[in-house]
Image 1: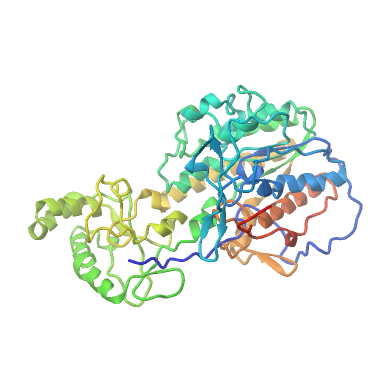
Image 2: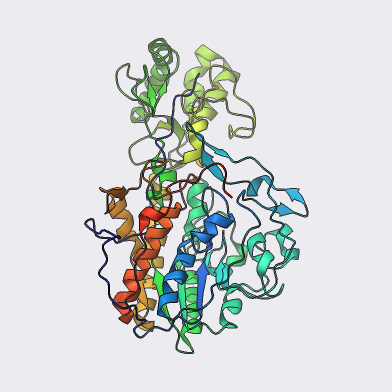
Length: 524
């Protein structure tokens, strides 16, 4: 079956922006730039991949230069800001080497080849074990969760093999035993930015909810990599960081978290891409004859059997004229495998009926409330492997079409219960961030409101606009999660607005048109 699910492409920057729709960055009133009550002499940025300038599924030099933290430092310079040092990657290819070896999990950046995003050519040259000397103002660490910032040894090479260390921090940590926060405090910052917490739910979401919600578990050492951080753990860590950073009178800016399920990574692939004929670029045209055969041989008998067990609403016959939903496994449903096995045994035989029961016992068609994750676009219609099937065997024909004749698995889709867990945790984190900002007198950025604006009409600047549409929106990079250069410029402007409002400074916004929406295949 040929894939017709094409990329809508490049969205808006879901994680920030409270710019006015009528705002024009090129027509700012010329007023003297002053710091107000803030002191920008020593600016330190703490956070995760956003603070680091990660983009297009990788960390590379140009992306770091165009990251929001570096943009902020450039604007701070006019108000007395000092040097802002960055632990730069070696190249614009992106990716990491581990002892000279390429690690597929840390590959080159993506670029758009006119049809789909693909990796740039070339071999990464950034070696994790080639330690960078000196101190760094940008302490953004891709992949870091809130509690990682206070974990001693997070930059210890010996911890890489057991997941106790982060390769990005290994490159520039001041010592193997230090923490990110400690490396910030030793520099005695006069101003800081803290944007952390996205990864505390992100890996759970991108994995399709395979992890566990650890609410109620106060021990992060027992968490899996895809788990949701306990809100109490987050609150304790976040409050302690803010207290330490402001202990000597430093001012700062903090940002809350948007609902990450509104990122292009979760909104690009539709729940209903299956059609009899092409309805545009975002569907899987399976053909009228195939629709009829599927209804007669699978969907019809399956619906009939499920109806007999009071679960007929799980499956509907496919339409020949409208878009049809994919089939998925919903682990929250009552498992009807024994009932289906018994129902199909007279016609299929005991062995085949048992297989059908195991496959479709918790199967249903997707709904508007389900979110299909971005990588699933290439899985729909493809043959499940023994590993991907969830049953340890490769399904035989005709049950060898993911989403069509074989249910998509947990990793492919976020279902409503998983989305609710993400929202609940995010709301709890945001309550903490808002309270800490108020308690410590910090500038506060409401990124959740910005994402809503990006998803509902977009944000205008000059003759341009940014939206949360994948590839075409201009704010998100090709990984569907991290901002583009223009998106990072937008984040910087929103932070500047918050800083000016809180401290009476008159920092100037940047012109978003000066930053690209996408990077080309080759960068100098």
